[in-house]
Length: 270
Image (tube, rainbow, N blue to C red; front, side, top):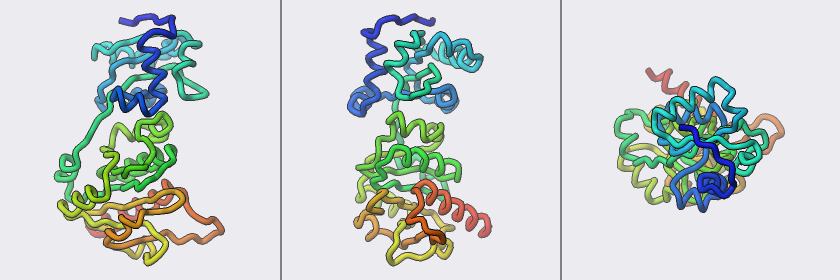
């Protein structure tokens, strides 16, 4: 059943607006997902959606109508609100008029590593820009990575900007946040996964490093690179040569180069 909300004092409106802030995402255990495609991705990946808010204009679209039918079958709370009221809860300048409230999902390392004989893990070490985090998760998904691990200090996985930048890959790929160096090293040692760090010193060109085995690649902070703690734990280090005048590559672009080199090496080894 579609309810109509007209007051900004409505509890659902207050909840949706509050999810722009990490504090309330943490307190409630939910986050907001905006846009037709991202809501579709959340549904297809079977994430738990507790509510969906739409404008009357958005409801004119056939894709939105299909979304509402699917969510109604899941007994999800559905609400229609005015464009003015939607503007109070959106985090985008060109909103599509549909927002889902989605429950966070937590993963355990052992559950998604043990079934993969050749795991490939992206480790984000204090990567602070939400756009970079989201783009890197999207890249990891496209390249067939097993999972993503984020150390403390990295951007919030469930911020609206991060969620948008993943382009739906958040719903396809296991991501574990706030994993300490000690925990990470313990995990990797237990499952015999080599840790390789991106670095500029004492490093080999990425195409000279054997990446065919179970591997975790660490990508570091935008300004400071990989932390010393993880550098000291790495079995080897690699870098991407720069042939032009650019000082560096964006972290997501660097990840794409390395992930697809891994895919190339693994195909060649078959």
